[in-house]
Image 1 (tube, protein in one colour):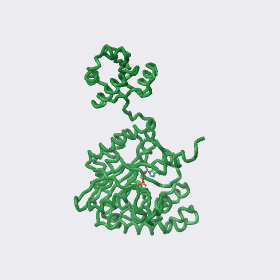
Image 2 (cartoon, rainbow, N blue to C red):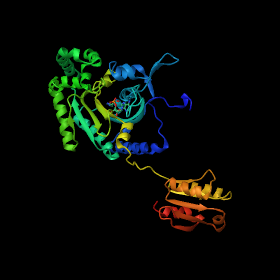
Image 3 (cartoon, helix red, strand yellow):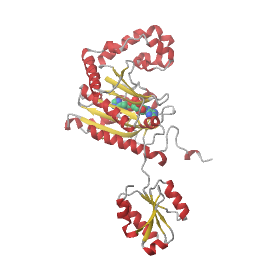
Image 4 (cartoon, helix red, strand yellow):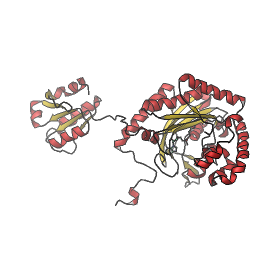
Length: 420
Ligand code: HAM
């Protein structure tokens, strides 16, 4: 038995070499799509002042009220490992006056986040998101672009069975009206509500719409609809988002109970779920937050974004082969004298961008050939004393088994001329 400290913390995971190539493929698709859509990467620190999240995300949210990893450091500062990225990106946007440099800022990130949730499949205490935050436009065309971008990454990586759920929760004023209407409706049912929902009744009744409890879902069937509380402008905005998505051929489902668990949202909210996942089926969540920059002390600036859980994406892909790159050439070196030749050849091939490996364990020919096959190489180059003397190495095609001698000096050119 290994000691406790040698085990990773509950809810955290090592990404081992057998898996890391899948992450790299996903990351490459993300970088590529972001580039195509004109988004630039932003990287923010791993921790921030706790107040940024309590003010940005909202005191009453699950994240802030019970899931943050927070501590007071030796200098008495209250700090928190970031549980989400919208607030840090807004902080950075304000601090560096990005809005003053350009009227529109399209930013993206890939990062690790921390939430002390109950771990289960698809839910971790350290997890990864990629996401975007766009500042400066209040218009529906950017809502449609943001949603289309998310779908584009998922399509390119090969995800199927996705459902895009869309809603508008309107402006803060109409949400106040709606909260009151919802409270009036729920009052007669108060005693039938769960403890959690009873707590939410006062502070955040819209969160009750998120319930997974069957009898609450039943009660809520008759609840007033947020769409009835939207102002004419909110309605027009939402209709245009929908018609732009129609024009782009993006399918969606309007779900009026979709409120999302963070306080900063206004107008458009959306979530993308996967039929390939269990209870934790949300791959991506996002929406508009037109009041957030101002709430955190910046100039009034509309914003919209989303974040997607990368572990969940990879889970939903199952064992789909996100083909990792394997070694192309394996050099089988035999005997002490060949070592400088093998080292130089490996280096020359690598400098020519050929994925090359050799055996640093000085094993037998048989063991090295086994390794060459195991690592997926297409070509094995065999060099022993005899080959060194004749100046000709043996080249073996590991797919066909064909073997031929090639001058050691001509090896790099020869390998370069092959399609590996
Ligand atoms: P969120 O809904 O809290 O939104 O998280 C977005 C996505 O992150 C979820 O849909 C899920 O895929 C993934 N996720 C969340 N918690 C976990 C967890 N414990 N383990 C694994 N995956 C998880 C936000 O974070 C907002 N900042 C999104 C946003 C950006 N809205 C506007 N801009």
